[in-house]
Amino acid sequence: MKRTQLSLNALGYESADKRLEILRLVGALGSISEAARQAGISYKGAWQAIHTLTNLAGVPLVDSVVGGAGGGGARLTPAGAQLLEAGRQMDAARQGVLARLSAGAGQAIASVGLRTSMRNSVPGVVQSVAYGAAQEPLVRVVVALTPDTTLASLITRESAELLGLQTGIEVLVLCKATAVEVQASALAQASAQSPGNLLTGRVHQVTKGSAQDEIVVTLAGALQVVGFARKLHRLRVGSKAAVRVDERAVVIART
Image (cartoon, rainbow, N blue to C red; front, side, top):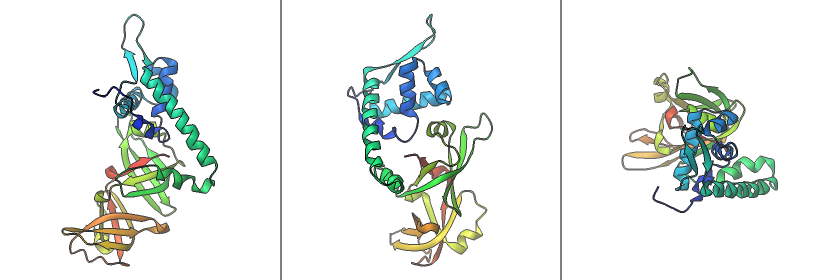
């Protein structure tokens, strides 16, 4: 760590997953393994949470001792305690603002605070979470964007645990526009057996480029997705289009 001053960038995760909860539990219990057990995640997942927060904060947040006569343990550094207090105050302020707004606008307003280079950000509800075998590191999450439109994402087991993903939870689905391939509907249907997400809609906008064009596609429920199509695609505003997204390129966030 080169920096000595605490960065509050780590607080971007406060409302998104269990990372600050793990840090709180470490401070209260004096043990990373106990914190993991109480939070209902793996020991590896707890360490991942601490490492991510430490990277974002720029300074050590936890002092740990492995083994020894006392059996080892962990405690928060002054920076770790400071981060938790800042997180508590920010969360209280955020909840106060949301409480004054209509419940229906909460999800949209929460997403505004999420700053990212990803062009695609749509709300959805978790439809299924498939963990697979005990040693399988990847989890397949299917999110319903509308009653008839779903999008699948492959994420790590630890990420699914830290996000607390389960059926019925509201999430945000994000994806870079450069990871979205737009094709003419007929051409995409011919290769429908290829792996990955395949969504259909109509072209809303075409922005010309030198080697490829940026295409905005309107899906069911008036949702819009931005992607790219290679030249000679023959896509026009109003024409049917298909959107293909690799499951590994889909990011899931909780607000």
